[in-house]
Length: 228
Image (cartoon, rainbow, N blue to C red; front, side, top):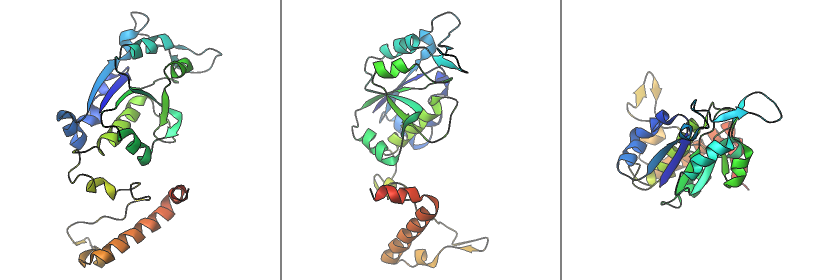
């Protein structure tokens, strides 16, 4: 899988994507990326990539001519994605859909300022994606979230393969159950006896019960979503 990343801050990459299992996968060429500096296509010697809004209002907007030239420089664009609060929220189901084609290419636009000119979205049939109901200062962090979430579920990335992700939150239709490891007693807190019993059936039932209770308490919206 390949990612083209358009940004005015190329120094932010690979960032977190260069560490841990995702970084190892990058070094093994399981996935790859190219960084395109939008300022290389600026309209003047000052590196300007934005301008005032038509109609007035606070904040600047990234120019369509600059961003269009940056996009046109990418030979294989694949699907173009822009990270925006207006987009559908990224979830684990959608991540799986993006990863279904292991040879896919995605071109990621990292916006800044108030956003990008609407005509770019129309001209290039851009898919808008939100990574949550909050505002970031730019799309670079969102791009890293998107790439990380995709790469970690690809084959040969996590130790243990599919088993490493099948029992995680959202993969199981709700939130994950509590996790414990050694020591069995820590500062007076004991590991639940059922987890020490060796009875796999009882352990599975306990975990499912805990998952259901935590999901009901913290994310009842997930229960409603699963019933659709």
